[in-house]
Length: 393
Image (cartoon, rainbow, N blue to C red; front, side):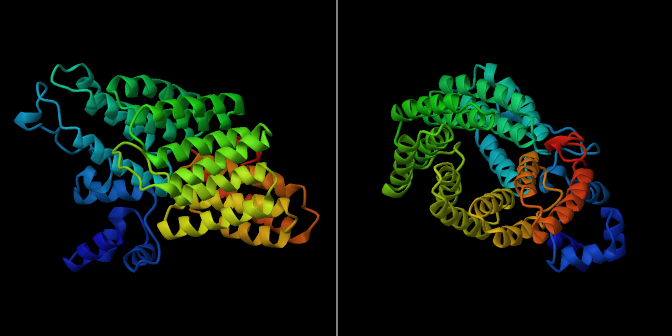
């Protein structure tokens, strides 16, 4: 956006007009233009698009009210569904935006794409099995965005719908991928037994399709997390080792619909597993590695979640000064990031630190945390219920 602002200014549009039309101050505009900060508020994108009549899709937005209804080319009319590549491109855009801003405000856009661009093709005689794969992948993505919005019941319904769609498409790796997502959700809901079962279901499905090491690594990791949460230390350690072997032992096969599971993801999950296995030294090493890898990749939400894990482990190790230092860094996380998951985990972290509030640096941090949380809740009031997390807003 800073580049777009500079281009407009170079074409003769004054900074006063740009700032006014975008609904920001000129000082903030200069920060964007000079690369000192990034545009993160959705309203800025919307106001800017409307002021300069920039089609919504060019800024990652839905079609604006003033845009004419699209007329499909002849080969894409109702009797000729749009190519599946449109869905792949949409998924890439959604995935990229989600990593930076969280899924809270993207959920509706994904559901609309499913309704407007995919649903009719499921019953078209001209559609092949690939449209069921597109429907499954985008439905699973909607589930993750619902989960990121704190709507786990709705997320579960999306995952439940995605699995039969994936099976119908004949894409067994995609079906296994959906099972991994269901395993994650079951674990987050406090049901490690169901999480283990979903991971095993995914591994069975993956074994019937082409070998994709990143997929089986993810499934073994989910199995290890659930087993560790259930205090089954030995099988959990074995599952984690299997995940490492899968990810390191063979070049990965490409699959268009699967979200990536890489070294950073494995390090992040390994830290949680090792923490639950009470191997805190190893857990901290993995958590710090995850932070370093996430920072390099510019993954804002994943970085915040990894930093939360670092603080959690440092507190468990009794390293309060280090924990407070990392926790202060966490407060710089963008307050407009539309991720209820991040807010909930920050609240869990506060409860953990509350046990050490007699230590002055911790007590001072808690005061600053509560001030930052009040600001965050105001900015995310459309996504988060007033008493989310149990901490007064």
